[in-house]
Amino acid sequence: MRKAGQTAVGKAIATIFFGALIVSFAIWGIGDIFRVTPASTVAEVGSTSISVNQVRNAYTNEMQRLGRQFRTVITAEQARTFGLDQQVVNNLVTEAVLAEQAKQMGLSVSDQLVAASIMNNPTFKGADGQFNRGLFDQALRNVGISEAGFVQEQRAAMARLHLAEAIAGDINVPVAAKEAMHRYASERRAASYVLLNQAAAGEIPAATPEQLQSFFNERRSEFRAPEYRAVSVMALDAAALAKPDTVSDADARQAYEQQKARYGSPERRTIQQITFPSPAEAEAAAAKLKEGTTFEALAAERNVSPGSLDLGTFTKAEMLDQAVADAAFALEQGATSAPVTGRFGPVLVRVTQIQPEAVRPFEEVAAELRQGLAVQRAQGQIERIHDEIEDLRAGAKPLADIAKEKGLTLIQVPAVDSSGLDKAGNPVNIPEKDPVVKAAFASDIGVDNEALRTGTGYVWYDVTGIEASREKNLDEVRDQVAARWREDQVAQRLSEKARLMTERLDKGEAIEAVAQEAGASVVNATDLARNTAKDDLAAEAVNRIFAVPVGKAGNAANGADSRAVFKVTAATVPPLVTTTQAAQNVENQLRTGFGDDLISQYIARVRQDLGVTINQQALRQATGGEL
Image (tube, rainbow, N blue to C red; front, side, top):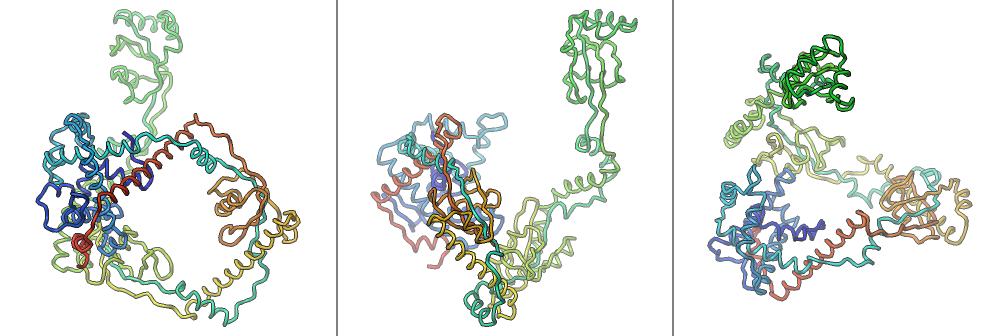
C-alpha cells in the first residue's frame, strides 16, 4: 500500500487512513461510535451522524496531545484561536465522508485481511516479535473499546484505505513536472554585483526634534512596552532531590567497577594462536618451545601462515573463548602460554603487544558517581513528592512555603514578557522557560495552575503580578527612535541609489563604470544556488538573482545594512538523469503530492454530493464554547 505523503495534506490523510489503530482511538475518540448515540448531533454526512460526545472526546484529546507536545497548557481560548474545533470536526467529517462512499460502493474487507492486519500490528507484538494477546486486550481496555468494536472500525478503516488506493495508488508523474522540479533544484546562476554599504548612503544629519516626533508618531506601536508578568517557579526533578552525601563509599566503588569503561579504555592485547588436533600434540609443541624452538617455527611446522597466526587485538571482554582470554591476559608481553583447552581444541597462545589500561582513578570520578547514584535513587521519589505537593496546593498553601518545606528552590521573577525576556531585554533563567512563560501568560493572578510535566519531573508556577502593556512616550525611547530613524534614512538612500544604478545597467552601461562612480568594486559570483548564501551575498539577494532574466539587472536587500546591485550573466541547468537516486526521490515526492491533491479533491467532491451539515451551536457545546 502507498505510504502517506510528506506534505500537510498527506499527513492529514495518513491520520485518517492509517490512524485506525490504537493511537487513533485515543486521539479521535472513535470508541464513542459504539456507545449509545447522544441526542444532540454536531454534523450529518449522508446517513452518518457525528455526535457531540464524539467531537468533545476528539477535541479534548487533541488539546491534551498538543499540551504534551509543547509541554504547556492549551487553553480553550488558544484552541479556538488555532481553529482546533474546526480542525477536529473537519477530520471527523472527512472520515465519515469516506466511510459513506465506501459503503455506497459496496467495498468490504475479508475477515482474513482484518485478522492479518491486527496480528501484524507492531503495537500488539511482544518482545519475541509475535502477536501478544495480553498487549492487545490491554490496549483496548486503555481506550475503552471492545474487541468487536475495534474489529469493526479496523474493517471500515481498511475499506477507506482501499478506496484511497484506487484513487491515488498508481500515479504516473509527467516528465514536464520532473523537469520543472529538477530545474528549480539544480539550476545554477552567475552574476556580477556591487554591494552598497552604509557608507554609500553618505552623511546622515542628526534628526530634528520634529522629525523624531513624526517618526515616533507613525510607529508608536513598535515602541510600546510589552506586558510583563511576575512569576514564581518551583521545579521538582531528580537532580533537585538528589543527595550525593548519602551515597556510601562502598556503593560508589561498586558503581565504579561496573562502569569502568566509561572512565577510560580497558587493557587491550594483541594475541597469536596455534591450534592443535590433540592435547598430546599441544604438549609436544610446548616442550619444543622450552627447548628453544620459536613460535613462528612451530606455526610453520603446522602450516599456519603468518596471516592466520594473528588472532587480533582485543579487550578481555571482547574475546569469545573465555579460557583463551584468561590465559592470554595472564601472560607477560612476548610470553607464550602452556597448552590451553579452548572451545575449538587445544591451543598455544602468545601475547605480542599490550596496550595498558587507561582509566581515571576512583578518587577523580567519585563525586560524579555519587551524584549519578543519588539521581537514580531520587527518580523513584518524584511521583510521591508530586502528590504531596499537590495536596499542599489543594490546601491553599503558598508555593514559597511548599518550596521551603520540601527543600526545593523557589525562583521569583519580578518581570518577564511573553518572549521570556526581562525589562533589560535579557532572557530570564527559569526551568522549562518557554512552556512556563507561555503557560503563565495564559493564566492569571490567584489561579491554581496545574503543574507542567517535564522530561525529568514537574514545574509549578504562580502568576504573582501583571504589568499591563502600555504606550511609551518619546522621552522614554528617544535613543531607540533616533537609531531607528537613522537606519530608515540609510535604507531609503541605499534603495534609491540601487534603483538608479539598476536603471543604468538595464540601459546598457557597464557595471564596472557604474560601480566606479559609486566608489564600490565589482564582484563576479558563480555557481549560485537558490536559497543559499554565497560569499558576501545573503540568501535573499541570491533568490532575487534567480527572479531576474539573464542579461537583466536588479537589486535586493543584502542583510540588515547593505544592498546588492547585480546583473545576471548566466544560468545553467544540468541534464536530467532519471536513473539517479536523487531523481527517484524527486519523482516519489511529486507522486506523493499529486496523490494527496487527488484524494483531497475527491473528498471535496464526495462531500458536496453527499451533503454535509454542521450544527455550530452543538459544536460550541462540544468544545466548551459559549452557546
